[in-house]
Each structure stands twice: as structure tokens, then as C-alpha cells.
Amino acid sequence: MAKRYKITMAYDGTNFAGFQIQPKQRTVQGVLEKAVNKMSKLDDYITIYGSGRTDAGVHALAQVAHFDFPHAISAQGMLKGLNSLLPLDCEITACEIVSDEFHSRFTTHGKRYMYRVSLDHFTNPFKRFYTGHYKYPLDIERIKEALPDVEGTHDFTSFVASGSTVKSNVRTIYEATVTEDKKNNEIIFEFYGNGFLYNQVRIMVATLLEIGNGRRAVHDFLRLYEVKDRNQARETAPASGLYLKKVYYNEKK
Amino acid sequence: MAKRYKITMAYDGTNFAGFQIQPKQRTVQGVLEKAVNKMSKLDDYITIYGSGRTDAGVHALAQVAHFDFPHAISAQGMLKGLNSLLPLDCEITACEIVSDEFHSRFTTHGKRYMYRVSLDHFTNPFKRFYTGHYKYPLDIERIKEALPDVEGTHDFTSFVASGSTVKSNVRTIYEATVTEDKKNNEIIFEFYGNGFLYNQVRIMVATLLEIGNGRRAVHDFLRLYEVKDRNQARETAPASGLYLKKVYYNEKK
Image (cartoon, rainbow over all chains, first blue to last red; front, side, top):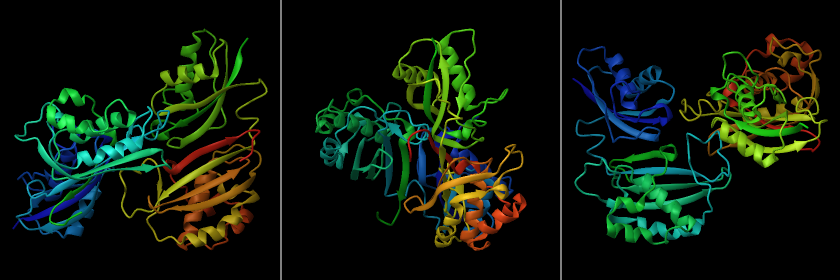
């Protein structure tokens, strides 16, 4: 009798062509399925279901996925077994056996993303794969003033990349914050919402940085919600700064 | 009339086969000389002189080098020109025109190295190229008690890797410290001395971690100075945790 395993994992997205499996590409789902199927040793192929995709170069501190496994292995045994088979840029950090009603994607209540922006005046060799970069003047107080406009339920059509196939662009953001990491000369955004559109976080970050720089009005988000025009938000912050920080199920926060 | 340029640079050592130029290998000196010679457009090959080598995988926050350049270019113009030609994992952070008496290697008064040790219980995908890793129990108070033994003038024969060709293994360490970075679950060593032997910092760190773990006596450094036997220090901490942090010339600290 197969049991369902929920796994939580961290990965460095730098050398992955995103989460979702693709022919001839190195993907997170690909290396996970290879490891799980190596452990099962069965002809029946086991598929991994992730909470959602991440793009090429996007990182995860706690991505969640599930799969059904035919043999009786403890959660701890599964965690150790998978980690012994996985490459070093993808690490299972938690594993539990869950009921068949759990689904990593359909039963999620929300997600939290983090975005790191380096303010270095030069291209820091240690940050090129791990932050976005903004080298223009930035008034963080303007960004703080704009962030309450991001929170709440809005039509985010101006913030969705072309290629998205969802029916509605309405989403709710419960929390949008920015903090300064003076030691590392960075600012860190966090967004906690019930779901995010394709490239939404990266487009919102680029827009917030333009607000901080003064080339947009502080409350430009309110206008962008109205116009519903992707061309007016323009920029997309690079994948390297984006981290999927948490996927929420029953528990809050 | 050629002028001498002193450059300070940061590099991510992960994808370099060390500093020193080698045939068919990607080295820091190699990419620097390629950039400088592309700028000079002369038949005479310009050689870069570094303050010292760093091994494959070892990083630099502020390595120093010099070279003589035949054309009149301002220090700022040289910095911008080189950075436009260098790969993103090597960045010039400062440049100045110096007298012909300056020599990056022979006129240095000392160096400062930093070593980052991750204490994570799992292999953190974001740290695999940027820290060493110690997953065993560690009493940092024992390390703090041992560090004064590291400071001072000693014969470091027990801490020099085979392959070293220097005449004397006596060096002076002015400062040896450890700090806790609780946010990142790391401890950070720093060593400031008048010079370091081949692999000396990595061997000292491995020894200090064994002291912290309790498998060596707190004052084992005093015994190791006496026995002058590399086999008794045994381990070498991985290159990934090591950073050349500063090279000292006339100025102190």
C-alpha cells in the first residue's frame, strides 16, 4: 500500500532550468524524480508534484512537493535516502508521511517569497547568483510608503508576465515588507499571499525599486491596478534575487 | 613611460583553478592578464604580479596585484576598463597608480584571512561553495581558550602542507579571533599575520575545530609547535570556507 510523502527542500536555483521537468534540461523535478525512482526500483514511474514552479535561477529555502511511494520507509529514512542520491544544490530539509488528501499544490493556503536586492556600487562576485542589483539612488522611505498599496486583494494584471494562462489575475497579498540588511548592503523584500502570478513578485520588485528611485509616483501601484496593462510596469527584476521562502498548508504564518 | 598600477580585487574562487596562471586552466591571473593585455594592444606581454597565490576554490575579498602599463590611463579609467573586460566572478574594487617601488608581493607587511564554518546540520545548498562545514558538537569556549596560543611568533612546521618550498616555517600571527554569526549559523575565524605558509590557515582551522569538539586538548597548539610534525595536525579544512580578506602595505590594520 503506497504512502504519500510530503518533502520540504532547499535548492540553489543557479544551475537548474527551473523546477518543472523538461526534456534535456537539468530541473529540480527531474533530479528529484530520478532519486525517488532509483529508491523505488519499480517499473511504475513515480511522479513528483511540486507546490508550483520556480523559474530558472530562482531559489527555494522551503519548496514543498509530494509523491506516493510503494515501499514502507520511515520519513527519516526517506529524507536520508533521498539526500544521499540528490546533488548538493538540492537538499531535503524535512519529510513527513501525510494523508492521501494532502496535495502540495491544491491544498496550499499561501506562499511567502523573499527578494534580495544588492545595493553595492560594484558587481559583487559573491552575489551575482543570489541577489538582484540596484545601483541607482534609492529612498527606502518611499518604498515603505508604497508597500501598504501592495497589500490586500487586487487585480494584478499589470504585474503578470505574458505566457500566463490563469483565468483570473486577482490575488490577495497578506503582507508586504522591506527590511534593510546594512551589514550586507542589501534590502530584502518579503511578500506573503494566497498565490502569485507568473513573474508577479519580480515585476512588483522592479516597480517598487523605481518608486524608491523616484522615477515613479509613490502610489503608482493604485494606478497600475486600474490600467491593467503589463507594458506600464515594464521591468522584471532578475531571477537570481528571488527565493521561495515558505509554502503554507493548514498552519498559519 | 609605463606607470605602475596597484589593483584590489574580489573574486569568487569557485570556478577558478586558483590565482596563479596555469596552462589550460581558468585562473585569476589568467583572466586578469587577458584583460590587461587586451587593453594595452601591444606585442609586449604584460604580466600581473599578485600578493600571493590562492588555491582552487579559495575566495578573495581584497586580493592585491600590480602591473606596469605603457599607456597613460587614469586609475579610474583602468578600473572601469578592466571591469568591462573581466568575467563577473572577478571584480576590481580599487585601482591606484603607485611608485615603481611598490611590489604587491615583496612590499607587503601582512595578510588577513577569514574562514567561514557552517554549523548547519544539513548540507546547505547555498553554502557549499562559500563555507567549510562542521556538523559535530562544538564548544566555542574551548576554541576561544586556544586562540591565544595561535597568536605570536611560532614555528608552524606542523601546519604546513607538503609541497611548500620556503626556507623557514616561522611566522608571526598578530591576531587570531573567532566570532559567532548566529543568524547564519556559522562561526567565523580571522587570522592576521606577517605571512602564511601553504595551507596553514586551513590546517589551523581544522585543528581548532577538533579542539572545539574535544578530540584535542585545548592547548594542543603548544605541543604541535614542539613536535614539528605535519602528520599530527592531520586535517585540512576545505578551500570553500577561506577568504583572503586584506593585504597590508604601509598602512596598519
